[in-house]
Image 1 (cartoon, rainbow, N blue to C red):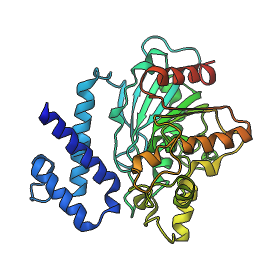
Image 2: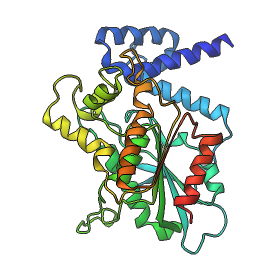
Image 3: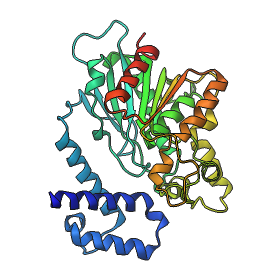
Image 4: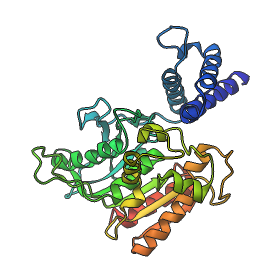
Amino acid sequence: MRKNRLVCFGILVLIVIAVRGSSLSAQTQDERLQQLLKRFPKADYNKDGTLTLEEATKYRDEVLKKQRQNRRPQRPEPTHADVRYGDHERNVFDLWIPEGDAPKAGFPVYVFFHGGGFVAGDKSGFDPSPFLEKGLAVVSANYRFVDGEKTLSPAPMHDSARVIQFLREHKQKWKLETNRIALSGSSAGAVITLWIGYHDDLADPNSDDPIARQSTRVKCIIPLNGPTNLDPHWITKNMGGPKHVHGSFPKMFGEPVTGNISSSAWERIKESSPIEHLTKDDPPTLSIYGGKLEGIPLPETASTGLLIHHPYFGKVLKEKLDQLGIANDLHHGSDPRRGNGQELIFGWLDEHLLP
């Protein structure tokens, strides 16, 4: 029992490093990494005696993946695994088709985007079983990670929007009803869900690429624990919390987001913030947050996880959705994976996707 607690503690430390590493001094981060190396020598993949942040993050993901697999029934094998929708190695998704004959119009589609701060996570963490039982085709997709240099935001959003276009281009082959697509995702995946839902249609009718000619618009969206505005100044002013907001922000926007911010970074921040793209023709939105709507403004000592997943983001979004007359609902203190949270999702799908 004690060993299991130590392993869980170590994993939590790895998560803190992966998420908040950019806010630490290089010396402090290196010291923590080397402390972890003594406890988790297997994390040193290249056996050079030094643990890097990339190795720590990879080890964390592998351990957490094994833990998820051990504590839940094995998810069903995809009908089509690692379907490639783009050129990058992470441009792949898994697709499940329900058993039995397809409806005349095809199977409605539920698409899920994983979380991980745009620097971690994988499509394998999503279990499609409850949605398959409702007769939905299910997609769990990967997308490019940001690195602060070559790949910046909104690249992951554009990748994910292409997933929708790819499904439409191949709808007859898989018997999909792509007029009825619901999007969902957690954390970073929620940002993607909101961004695709609210962004103007990315279809390019003049493209030589038939996939790019397809629409990116969807029927409804279900963001889970999603930050709706990525403007660091707005977040600090209205919500408090740590001034660096989140360790992924420098990798998303190409520079630190405290103090003065360059015009190019501001353009990326604005383009990446879902709430900036809202118009009255956007899809119905069910926002679910695990935390409670309290404690704002947060103290500077609050964790980045508490800040970036706070339902205050959903409150502000709901006010704008109400002003525009867009059907929406906001729930906080609910676990979307089970119980009341899952019932909320299925009720929303029954009302806005399946009729």
